[in-house]
Length: 588
Image (cartoon, rainbow, N blue to C red; front, side, top):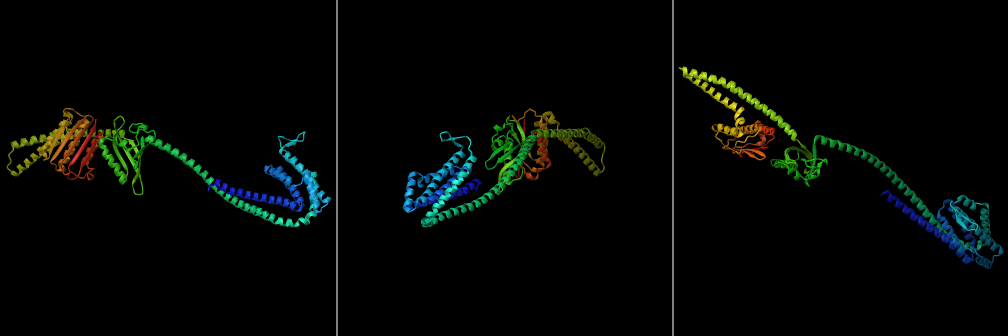
């Protein structure tokens, strides 16, 4: 229960019981009034002295309390009492005459009547002084005509002096003496009625007393409860203030953390993405970020917006990678090509991890989205430099083989032929050994020539990649049973030398692996040029292989490395018994 409600509840009870006490007190007062009236009615107003004395005491009490406290309830009670007693007391001449007649009829003489009459006169005199004290306490003063007028400053001290004056007190004591003497005369006749009225008065008195005790007890209990509630509230307030301080500290730390986070994200040139798997909605952070060169206001908060900008060859791989992460968990990490707002192809690295529910279902994926195009280009430059260095080294080795090794072996072959033309062998074994050495030497010369050509095929540089592939296929037809077919639409158009060399090396590596392992009957090679794309496909109907088990072999890695070095895309698809398909794409 709230403290406001508690206070309202408790004090409502206190006010309720105070009202009951007030009603009981008024009932007790009414009892006293009715008692005086009934006594005068029944005994010819013999008990008027008691009412007169109570009247004087009550008037004095109300007047004094009003002067001290200024509470208007005492003023009202004062005038109510005067109004009541004016009707019941014989204060006017007609009442005095009736009183005298009543007393005479009851057998009392002139002295008894004068006692009461004098007491009534003194009571009226005291009332005038009390009224004067009332008006003085309120700041009213009499004018020259004897009427009261309002002044600006109340004078309570002067009012107290009026009702505490010796003359006022002397008249009060005199009234008491007069009433006492009067009561002594009528005490015997009123004793029986008094005893009867005492019972009722005591009942009301004890009722009021019990109510007061109850209110006091209830007030103590309420005070204790309020005290406990206030102490508890103080503890709660202290904790609240401490919580506010900690909250402010946490808020400051969060602001600093957010600032660090924003600066870190900005410095890393990364974008935070938050994907709701259930609603398929996506949020990007910070709020002023640019995704694929789109302003933040133009970025649609959906995964479809992101996948719509994927390169067509990346869409299925991206979808499978994301679906696998959602279903099985594990880190989400993929590099893919996206088209930006200007339709330029750029590389982005997408990383993320997901929060999962009790049933291990992915609920939310949060990660970073980073533009790695420059990094890829730097790697391409590095790989290009490596490949250029490799090609130069191949060229050097090829020249060394051609200019040194082949010349030496050719000279040796000429000498062998001259010796064979002038020498006749008498021993058949020596003749066979000579012929064997002679044939191996010729074979070594042919293999060194082929090796030099493979290391640095001059035809690529001189006539282009299409002619080079045709020559390669022509040279291999006699060494394999596989039917090799080559299609292209380049004509006499040339590509960049780095691209031509890369394509030639990939075809060379693929055909070599196919001849060694695939047992294929047919192999089709297509090199097609489109307006914005160079596409190479190599398909065979061989035995295929398990890609996951051979993904890190030197041949496949060599082809992928060469493709990545020039910014191309290479994909190998194969399964046991279904042949092999190699796809190479280069944007230009």
